[in-house]
Every structure is written in structure tokens, then in C-alpha cells.
Length: 33
Image (cartoon, rainbow, N blue to C red; front, side, top):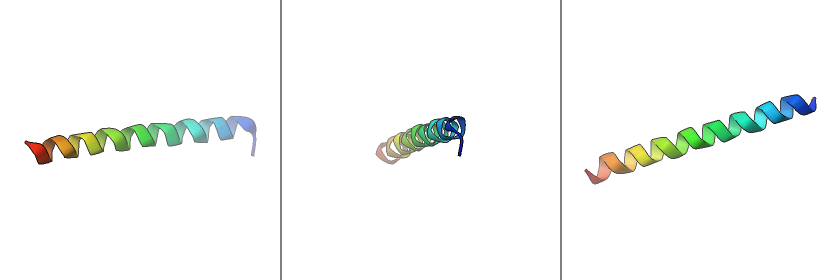
């Protein structure tokens, strides 16, 4: 496990979290409309 791999993994997890947040927001908007 190199530090660069840890950095890449953390950034990947961050991206996935942001995508999940966006999808949740879209689902909420669709439900309310």
C-alpha cells in the first residue's frame, strides 16, 4: 500500500459520496414534484 494509492482511493470514495448525494437530491426532487 503506497501513499499514492491511499490518496487515489480516498479521492475515489469522495467522488462516489458526491455522486450518491446528487442522486439522493434528484430522487427527492422527483418525489416532491
